[in-house]
Length: 396
Image (cartoon, rainbow, N blue to C red; front, top):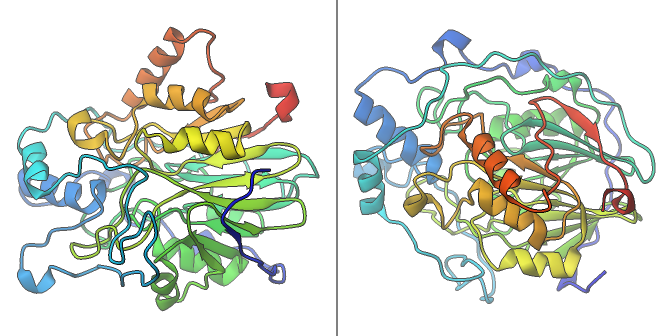
């Protein structure tokens, strides 16, 4: 395995004795009320976009300008931290408030069902054995990864809205694929960055209280999470790693994105993907990212991959979204760049964060796969579906 910048020794906590009850964290509201709330369409759309799609929520008054913003990271200057804000692996076309207004005025929103009812998936196994890998797609960027006896959950979101407010902001269009009480005992939770559709404080607090997992996040998020009562094991920098067991390692890897939960904390905390390393084959969780040269570096250092989770949603309009969200055809290219045997698309079909419709990402993905030769191996998992992944040698 190629060397990385540094390693964080982490001790495992005792295993929890009980599982969480879904009654304590229900989806607020009814399916019939899952559409937009009251007020003018223009106002609702503007606030929803600002709250979810770019991670900020403009509330109008100056006194509320910094509401919901997180404390800034304080640390040494590096190649991707200038002492005040984090930087992408390469400069990107930064979008500003005028660009947001242009998008709002000229939106061409794809079709979403007001609510898509779907059954919960079956309860996953308690654990998998040595060398085994199983992936269960919950929704959006929430995946249960069961690897070599470990249960790992990425960016867990069970709340109704990806927003700081219960009554405003991007609302889910379908239920989570799994009930909370059906989750197995969790060992590790990974939080890639602080956007509301990836860092759900209510869900994290509930899971932390019952499962007592080790929580790993990125630079600048630990202080905020712990201020909300969520114990955090470590915050990692790009190319930093931490052992999870004697057989499984965790690596924090670059992404091309941004951060922010309010109007005063843009890029004051870091964003990243994660790689799980194991003898039977590595697993890549890309989280949220635009297309960039970091994928080739990840593939070179930590590939090939037994399994990769690649985002495909919130990519329209491309002039606005492309720097920070890759499109389905770019995910197909990334699959080859990182040298993944199998990829699973994520970040679609739950929250309407861009102009792409509910099924459009999968439709565009199928077109891109059909045009590729040979056809890459992508598994489109139903919400709540789990599937066993073959060893890397068999899947290659």
